[in-house]
Amino acid sequence: MATVSMTVNGKAVSGNVEPRTLLVQFLRENLRLTGTHVGCDTSQCGACVVHVDGKAVKSCTLLALSCDGSDVVTIEGLAHDGKLHPMQEAFREHHGLQCGYCTPGMIMSAIDIVNRKGNALDEHTIREELEGNICRCTGYHNIVKAVEAGAAAMGGKAMPMAAE
Amino acid sequence: MYEFKYHRATSARQAANLLVKADDAKLLAGGHTLLPTMKQRLASPANIIDLGKVAELKGIEIKGKTIVIGAMTTHAEVANSAAVQAHLPGLAALAEGIGDPQVRHKGTIGGSVANNDPSADYPAGLVALGATIVTNKRKIAADDFFQGMFATALGEGEMIVKIIFPIASRFAYAKFPNPASRYALVGVAVARKGASVRVAVTGAGENGVFRWADAEKALGAKFSAKSVEALKASAKGLNGDMHASADYRAHLIGVMAKRAVMAATAK
Image 1 (cartoon, rainbow over the protein chains, first blue to last red):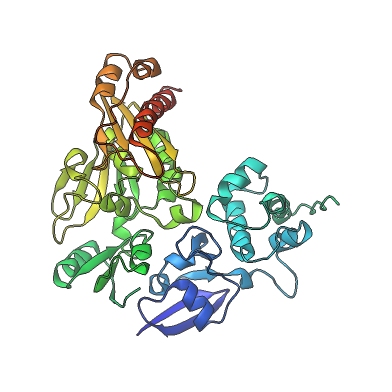
Image 2 (cartoon, one colour):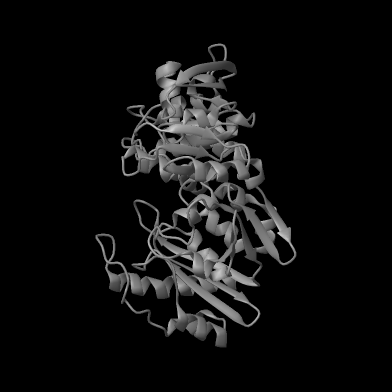
C-alpha cells in the first residue's frame, strides 16, 4: 500500500491505496464520490471524465498515485450553495440526458471545451469536441444544445430557454 | 490489473537507472496504451516507473532549423504549441487528430513512438520528416527506429528523451480513421525539404510504418496532387482484416497521399 494525497473539489484528501488503484476507484471507493461513473473502462466512453490540474481526463485510465499532489474536480465539485453550475443547469433545462449515466462525464467535458474554446461554441465544434463522450440514449441532439447554452451562460449571458 | 511495485521518477537519469535495476520494469508515460493493456492482463510488469513528474522530459523548443519535443510532451501540448503551429503546422494538425480531447491531455509523443502501434499517427510523421529519436544512450534515425509491429530499435534500459524534427518547407498528414476506434485505417504523411520528398504510410503495412518510394519519386519530380493521382499503391504486404481488405487499404493510400499533398500545398 502507498499513501496518496491530492485536492479533490477544493478539499485536501489522502488515502492508502494499492499502486494499481485507478483514480476513478479512489474517487468512488475511498472518497465515496460516486458521481464519476465507470462505463467502458477502456478510455473510450467518457463517463469517468474529471478535471485533473484543470484538464479533462479519463479517470479510468490514470493511476491514483500518478495524481499525487494534483488538483482534481469531479461533478460533485460544480454546484455551490445548492445552486447548480451553469452547465448543469443547461443540461437540466435542455433535457440533455435520459438515463443520466454519461451525464457527469458529458458535463465535465463540456466545461473543459468552454475552458479551451471559449463561450461562443457552434454545433460543429461541440460535436467534434464531444468525440470522447458516448451517450447511448439521447442521440446527442439535446446534449449539443445544452453545451451551447451552458457555454454561453458560463460567459455571463442569460440562458436561452429550451424550445418547447 | 495485476499488482506491481510503483516508482515515481524524479529525473530522466533516475528513471533510466531504475529501468535497468528493477526486474521486469515498464516506463509509464501517459499510460493510455499501457494501462488498458495491463487491465486486460495482456501485460503484467512487476515494476512501473512513472515519468509523469519528470519535468525535464517535457517541452517544445526551436533549435536552429529543427523543433525539439520532449518525450513526455502531450498530444494536446504539441497541437496547441505556437512554435509547432508556426513552423510545422502539419505536425500540430497530426497531434490534434489523435484520439479524443481527454486522451490528448494525457497521451505523449514519447509513449506513442516507443509503442509503435501499427495504426498510430506519429510514426508516419517521424519517418516522413526524417526525425531523430534521442534516447538516454544514442540518437536513432526514424528510418532505423521503427522495426515492425510494436517493435522498435530501443534496447534494454533504453528510453526516449526527446525527438528532433527537421523543419520541412511542406508537411501534412492525412488519415482515414476507423469509424469506431478512430485509429488510422490508413494514414499518409508527406514532407518536402529542399529537393527531397518523403512519403510515409501508417495503418496499412503488415510491418507497421513504411515509405512509399513511387510517390516520393513522382512528388520529387513535381510536388502536386496530380503527381500521385496516376499512382497505384501495391496491396502486397498490406493488412487485410474485418475493417478493410488489403486492396481497399492500397486504394486508401493513394487517396490519403493526395489529400496530404493538397493540405501541404494549400498555402
